[in-house]
Length: 118
Image (cartoon, rainbow, N blue to C red; front, side, top):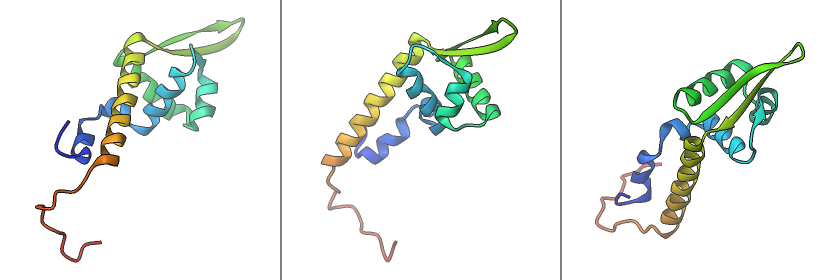
């Protein structure tokens, strides 16, 4: 970790930290697997947006996507891979560490004060 918790934010995994993907991974961490429509309703993402994020997560081996049919009805099931579970767990721990660090942080008195800023 850097000098302040604010500098450490730059070290977050952008693949996981992007808000839509963070929502997807967090939802998947709470369930063994979910179907596409459930995940779409839960995250409030459009079909195309959810599909794009899932494709990115699948390319990165963080989720596994299973497509098939039940009778004539198509289904898509999504689950975290072990790598995905590790990534979201590590990310949430990193966020908690940043939060704890920010709560203890004291500004350096030697830093120049902002002039007339907002």
